[in-house]
Amino acid sequence: MNAALLVILFFLVLCIWLGLQARKGKEMNMEQWSVGGRGFGSLLMFFLLAGEMFTTYTFLGASGGAYRSGMPPALYAFNCFYFVIAYWMLPPIWKYAKENKVLSQSDFYQKKYNSQALGILVAIISVVAVIPYLVMQLKGLGIIVSEASYGSISPQMAIVAAVIAVTIYVTVSGMHGAAWTAIIKDILILGVVVFMGFYFPFHYYGGIQPMFEAIHTAKKEFLIFPEQGLSISWFVSATIMTALAFYMFPHMMAGIFSAKSGKSLRINAGVMPIYQIIIVFSLLIGFSAVIQVPDLKGPDTDLALFKMAKLSFDPWFVGLIGAAGAMAALIPSSLVLTATSTILSKNIYKVWKPNTTDQQLAKLTKMLVPIIALVTLFFTFNGGDSILTLYLMSYSFMVQLFPALFFSLWKKNPVTVQGAFAGMIVGSILVIYSTIAETSLATLFPSWPNVIKDLDIGLAVLLINIAVTLGVSVVTRKTAASVNDDADISNPA
Amino acid sequence: MKKIFLLTTIPALGSLVVINRVEPYIFGLPFVLFWAICWVGLTSLFLIVAAKFDPANREEE
Image 1 (cartoon, each protein chain N blue to C red):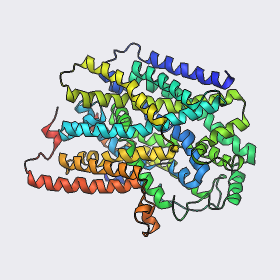
Image 2 (image 1 turned 135 degrees about the vertical axis):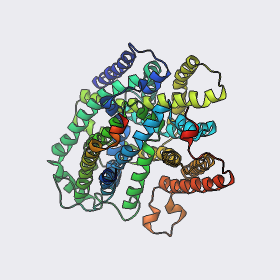
Image 3 (image 1 turned 180 degrees about the vertical axis):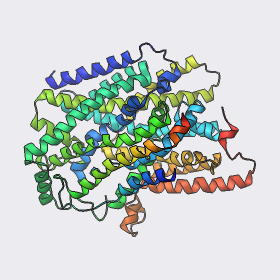
Image 4 (image 1 turned 60 degrees about the horizontal axis):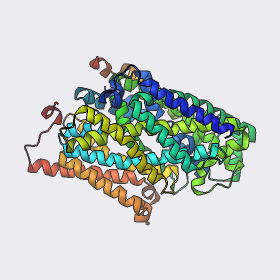
């Protein structure tokens, strides 16, 4: 047992203790457990939603991406589009959810379209999309803890221990546990990342500009977008795709439902970009590794940050970095687990067995947490993708739920249940196909111009999805003129 | 409503514009990176101003 490991262990215990504390004085019914009783004010909301920006991706993915491919993945890490979408879309979603007592993201679809079957489809797609996301977090966590322990703990063992920890505290306190631990996590990450982001460039290169100049001389084209591949067109399309998908995730929707007012969500959208500034430091760390540790290949590139840290600091500080990183993976995982198990029990099991009482349902939801965790473990040990790849895969699935939600917020929803169904199914199948066959627009249309070839596949599939959704809606509306125009009015419950 | 909508479209579009060049360095950062960071700050500014004056806030209360 070394100093680094002790520090990580300390924070892990602290996390669990806080999770257990959070439930005190609250009766843990379903609404408390899943959406924190819908009473989180601006500040707690801010930490909860913004916490989602500080994940393994920020910590390892962004620095690893900058290290591996330079500027394009680095700029992709900033996504201002998120917040503009958040500003406009979240308050109406929240309002509808409150008025209709919506608890989960698939509830939302089910009530808007007055169709249980659609609720189930949304639940299934979300669970499928959430798996690569959880795998990404766990994989990152394994890397972090095993690196920080100087190899004395294998990544596999670290992942198993983390799954146990996260399962305990999610089961016990649900949304409340996540909110409070998120605050410690953010402070820790902020400190560690900002410090390293300054320290490395100054220590190894004598400043930030000298560092970039050194990289620019050593690797021409590294600091700008290339003509093809990760080009500007990739950047723009991937940015839009991720922003649209971001709030579709079941745990993000659950986060939105926890808000106290539409205003707190709007202000939140404005404050969150400030949080993103911290990614700059993560990028500086990645760039500083380019010349210092030049030999990382493939998925190992995600280790850039740790290689630099171990090269430069004492074990106890590496442990602190490890703890920050581990929490960056744990908190989002716990949010995802809470939301996913709520969906599985409420939107699939309860539909199947409508007589289930609320107590039984709450019990089942908590039992599902370890089961989902185990499924994720299985996939984590059986795949070899980099963090950025898993991230994009998960988002490509999730964005397929966007059209049906977007149009349902219109005063007069142009989309019918059949249209929503068709769009989601076609979209998901195409994403599965392109993931398995590893297609991109470049392999499909090799002779087309780069501007089109480099477009993000998730966004391309989304456009097909929208066309199918609207197309089928027009046809079904014509054949069944009696279909209600507005699910709001026809189904107030 | 219309004015606030405009206020939020500016950062949406601006952040997607890429100025693909390394020089000049600003605060030690390559220009392309500096530009992107600028838009993060501007997005925040525009959205906070919009949130402050959004008439929808009053309707909800």
